[in-house]
Length: 355
Ligand code: NAI
Ligand code: MG
Image 1 (cartoon, rainbow, N blue to C red):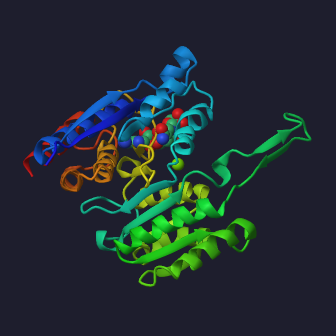
Image 2: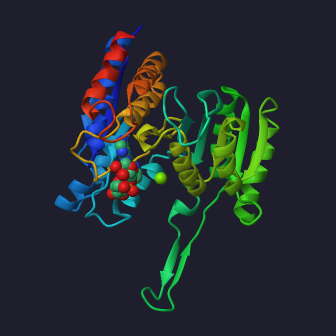
Image 3: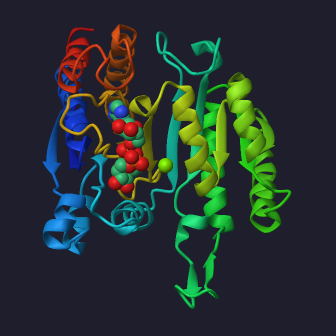
């Protein structure tokens, strides 16, 4: 058997990004030692600080280098002085579009011992997987502005939905459902968004014929928010469009215990490009430098990265280690967390090594 070696690009980013990414890397190193693979972590200095210093967001040459990796680990980007949209469109969305990261995969899982704002909710009742379309919808960037800044301003922000784009994310959702509890729910707003909703709905029910073992369901996305809170046990895999997915996964993060726990993967399932793994949260400038950032979301994102690289034993070890530390944390974020970002990262890495 040949040596298993992975090339990982690391964009630690701004604010708490570097703080939590350091903990994710500790866990990956412990997992590598335990499971017998190696990886190189190549750091890329991108984000708000770089933009403010040089005006650069993502130079073409850097994007080319990123493309040569097996995966990308990202902390968070954004500083208060960077105008909105610069990093989102210029870095995050650009990588999603250019690297065809058409799946934004966000598990919504309540781990044992984690306080949830939903009274009486138990881990058995909360294990959902949201597969959000990540390259189209209202985030495609089409539209325009007329007579900007005047009383007669016109703003158009189109939603782009292609059969090709919808079909590939829906198929991914069905495949995930097959490997889980075999249920797929589409969230949309077909009663109002008849054009895009119609395409999504038809695509789901047409593909369903190829997946007779998967039970298919549909909910209007507003009602879905209600069900996710009242009866999350009815959901296994949820598939939805870019904007709806962005919104319902923040709700999911709240249900599972907060932003400090929510992990995500931006996937190119065909592996033509590296997939990118990041916590759902941002750079949290309000707590940067205090040791208050919960590292678990970044660590769980690293576990998703390991799973994507085929290191399933390592992925499981890292997720289990994070899960084992969670019940020892008094609060899921902030000063009452039962340790600092760094000390919690150490405890998780020790659990990976010793487990
Ligand atoms: P945010 O997620 O950074 O913070 C929201 C709230 O959650 C803050 O009170 C923060 O302290 C808290 N929080 C976030 N992560 C935490 C953690 N791991 N542990 C403990 N508390 C945590 O979102 P916000 O404030 O809207 O954005 C701040 C900056 O981050 C902005 O520049 C924004 O553009 C950027 N951002 C970047 C993202 C990315 O890189 N993918 C995603 C979201 C926001
Ligand atoms: Mg979001």
